[in-house]
Length: 143
Image (tube, rainbow, N blue to C red):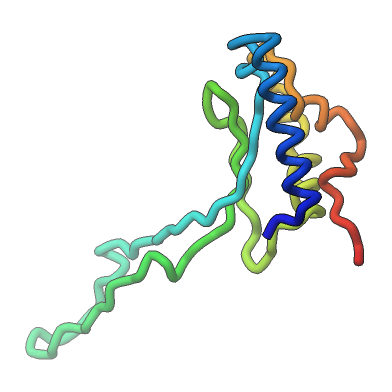
């Protein structure tokens, strides 16, 4: 749930974006890079050959249960801009996304994101974020 402070910060960011769009026009939209986390469901189907088993011709067939997709999920962080996906990062199992893991993802992938952003000849806030050694907005407060 968002606190009043978070709501105020989001409102301020939205107003800044609107002002820059008003001043810079469509070119401003090419400078925006955003990211989000999502669960990705996956199934690793067993091949027909792998599931074969030796049995007598008169013995009954083994009952196979259908796999449920929701049983296997992995957390994924995706960064994209107006032109498409820039980076997809999968979080290891049994880990959660927090400020520290988010910063780690950005630091690990700094080169790839910077190269992608520069190759597209854009200057964006994420590029500035990656250039800075520490971003206080991403570091969670310790209570």
